[in-house]
Length: 375
Image (cartoon, rainbow, N blue to C red; front, top):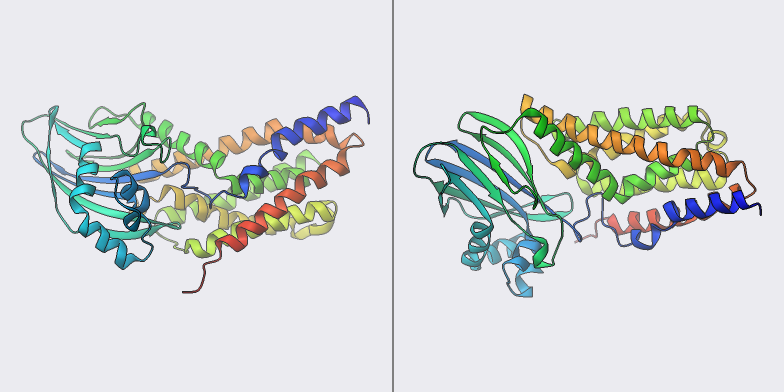
C-alpha cells in the first residue's frame, strides 16, 4: 500500500477507531458515571432566599458517606425513605458545599420542604428545598463546591444556576475554577460564553452524538453532501432542542435514547452497504432530518431548562446551541479533508468497514441497553 494510504488510514484509525473501546460502557447522551450536573433555582429578595437543588440521587448519597442500601436504592419510595432517614447527613453535606451570602455574610440555611425525587434523563435526582435567612444589606452571592474532584466519585462537576434574585434574572454555570456567582456583576456576554462552552462539552462528551456525526462524515463523498446533511441535522436538532428545553415538547428519555442509538446504526449500516447516496437516495436528507429531531431532544435533556420563556432562558438556550454548532463545524473541518484524502487511496474501502463495523456494534449495544426493562 502506498505510504499516503497507510498514513491516512492510521490517522483516521487513531481519531475515529480508538473510541469504541470506551464507547460500549458509555451511558446515554449525558453520561453520569464520569461527571454530573447539579441544578439550582434561586429566588428571593433581601433577607429571604429560597433555593431548590436537583442533585443526582446515588451520587449525593455516596458523597454524604452513607451505606450502600442508601445509594443503591432504585425505587422512588425507597429513595424517599432513605432521604428522610438520612436527612441530617444529606443536608449537612449540601449546606457545607452550597452557600448563599448577603453583603459577604453567610446566610443561614434551613430545610423548607420535604425532599423529593424526580427523573432527569435516565437518572434519579434528589430535590432539596432550602430557605436561607440573610442579614445585612447589599447584594447576594451564590457559591457551589458540590461533588468536587477530590471526592473521587465524579469529575468536572458543573452547577447550573437559574436565579431571580434582587430584581435580576439570569442563568450561570458554576465550576471549580469559578465557583461563585455575584448578583449584579454578571454581563450577558459571560452567560453566553458559559453556556456555549457547556454546549461544546456536551457534544464532545456525548459520544452517541459524536458517532452519529462521524457516521454522516464517513458516508459523505463530496463537500456538498456533508454541507447538506450537516445543515439538515443542525436545523432539525435546533428545532426540537428549543421546543423541549422550553417545555413545549416533552418526550420521555426511555424513547429518545434508544432511537438515538438506532439512528447511529442506520447511518453506519448505510456506509457498510455502499455509497450512502445510492442506498438512501432521495430519502437521505429526510432521514437525517428525522433523526436530528430526536437528537435535539437528547441535547435538551442535558441542559434541562424547562421554565416558561424569557429572554434570560432564551439566551442560555441559544448560547448552548451555539456551542454545539461551533464544535460540530470544527469536527467536520478537521476530519472531512482526511476522509477526502483517504478516498483517493487504495485504503478507502478497508477504512470505511474498519470504522463503521465498531460503530454499528456499539450503537446496537446501546439500543438494547437503553430499552427499559419491564417491571
